[in-house]
Image (cartoon, rainbow, N blue to C red):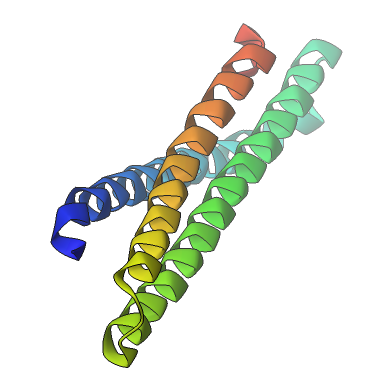
Length: 137
């Protein structure tokens, strides 16, 4: 019965890896920005108002990127926790002789988690691209 739903587990794996890759990419970007920030910080004390304003805007953007990364990570951890719970429920259903319909219901919940993970990532990408001004990116 669960073999019919193996593609759902593959979708979950792919979606989870994509989300994790996004988090790793943001970690790399933030790491580079922090290094660049450290290298330019002495300039801020002697900078013109325009340069100081630009540095403040840059800092605000770095904070936004950190918040985005943290939201992606939280979404991924919540989805993984839900999937792990559902997997144990499937095992329980299998070994206690619960009706096949119960296992199918759980697989459908896992499928919903997959779709939710993908939709949240797509929604957040669209939301971020619509709210970020070109100078903020």
